[in-house]
Structures are given as structure tokens and as C-alpha cells.
Image (cartoon, rainbow, N blue to C red):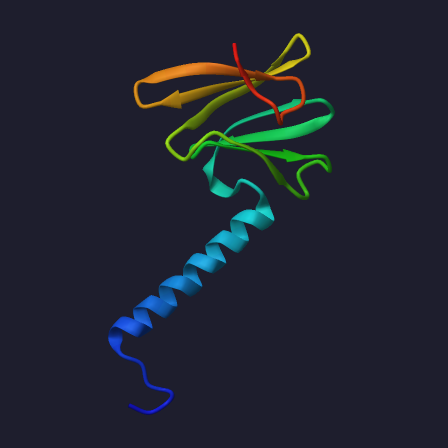
Length: 111
């Protein structure tokens, strides 16, 4: 085996890692990427919720995004809404759903 030849397994492992890194980099650069299923504006910022339990925040009209909450990859953020000064996230887990509330999008409590 020459230094520049790879086994089939090594090739697929390397290309899989490269593709995965590109997808993660693209998702982090765009914020929530294509997984967004809920969005709202609150506290003068934009929020996106994803089907894998993440909430992203943008203070610059969606140019950059920062993850502010992770409820678990088994949870889906089905809805985000602002009511009476409180941000609400409807979270789905399997056949069940519940509502969490926050006054700063970082600390969440059950409603």
C-alpha cells in the first residue's frame, strides 16, 4: 500500500467524516439550518426551535445564530410563542407534549 492509497473502508470513513463536518459547519453557520419547525420574535430577538430539541437566538435579524437551549435530541420544539412577556416553547416527546416557559430564553420552567 502506497502512502496515498486507501482501503475502501478507510476511504468511506474519511469521506463520511468530511461530509459530516461540512454539514455541521453549514448548520452552525446558518443557525438552525433546515431543522427549524418553530419560530417567533421575543425580547427584541428572533428565536428558532428545531425538531431535535434546540432553540437558537439571533440578535441581528437572522444574520448569526447562537444556541441558547437544548431540551434533548428526543424532543421536538413544536411551537414558540410570546405571551404576556414570557417565551413559551411547546415540546413534543413521542405522543406527548408539554409547555416550558422562560423570561430570558436560557432558564426554562414547566408551565
